[in-house]
Length: 476
Image (cartoon, rainbow, N blue to C red; front, side, top):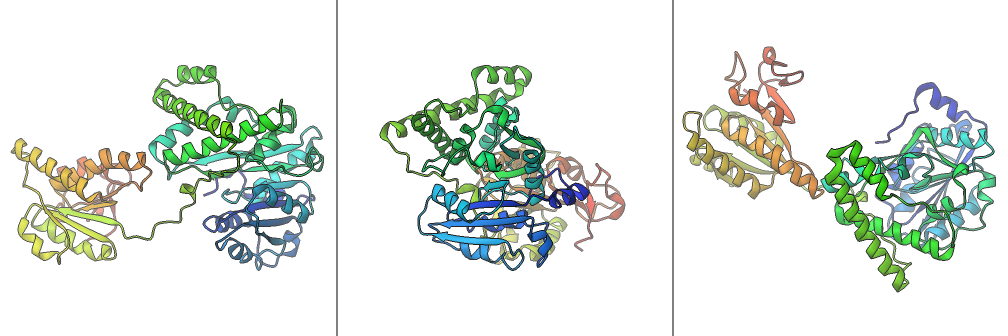
């Protein structure tokens, strides 16, 4: 989802500007993301609107593609007439950028990576800064990093990186999108055959000639896991070293200094573990990049495919867990809603195994507040079930087994899933219909661990907190 600060009248004003834009999008095997990129870019346009078409030209350059990138891009031509799809058999970003320049007609000119999400309104708003100031030659919207699908370690890294002066001083153009004026583009002839095109462009301008523009933004998807992050950061460092070798004295800019990290820890002590991880990643990638430069390995392109994965189509692993009696009857009433998923069952009555049609079944011991020993044994048994099943969704109608399942899913499985870049487990509590006057003890205590917390009686809705529990009907 694009994070924009532009809406309503401001977006209309941006699109009505007289200077048209050309957008060059190099794309190598980007079938997984090119549709998302073009959908967000062209979200303001209606099919056949010739007036709107006049304000924007899009050139998608498919280079060395062996997938459906070109076909997906062409599918947008019926909606937007000024979309040109160019193909070359050479898999090279620099070749694609130069080929895009040959077909682009307008300035300001935008160079946009295919995995970026932004809108024409955001690009137009940023480009206006070039028209308003002759001193500015290169601008970019502000970058937003989407870490919602990333592991805990990746989110920790970006919690540091996004707070460093390299990112916050307003001069870091590039990282997926940059916009050049005509005079800015005249600073160099053709894009050289190098790893870091944005680093090269950034090095062509002094600090006062380039700027990120507040009020407009683009979104980049962070890597899903730590190995992918290390790969792309190695690529960035290798690209910067290549620039230093080929263009001595070029002002590329470093990501951080020890002083900046120390200041960050003093201001935000809770970020110390994240800073240590950040330093580890930077040192590791520096060592890897130096080894590649020493070996002359500049041709290897390390793309982050983890952020380009299409949504998984495999069924979810769903654990349905409940106590015996009425709790079990109600969980079985919910079963049809999950028949297309991979179902697992757990209950305190082992005889119920014969009712689940051969699906995996786990028996857990009874437990109650009257016997702490039994309660501990039940909790450990439920934990064992969770570790064996590794569910992506836990659904329960109570009582104690359901509480322990949601508790361990939230405090243990959820952070582990995030740490390794997996889909975080979700939890659902449906309080028993027998609890007419008030929620059960477990139902009240479990609210903090349930993603979805429901009662089957409308008068009990919101009795724990706003929205908890909710009411959506009854299962009996």
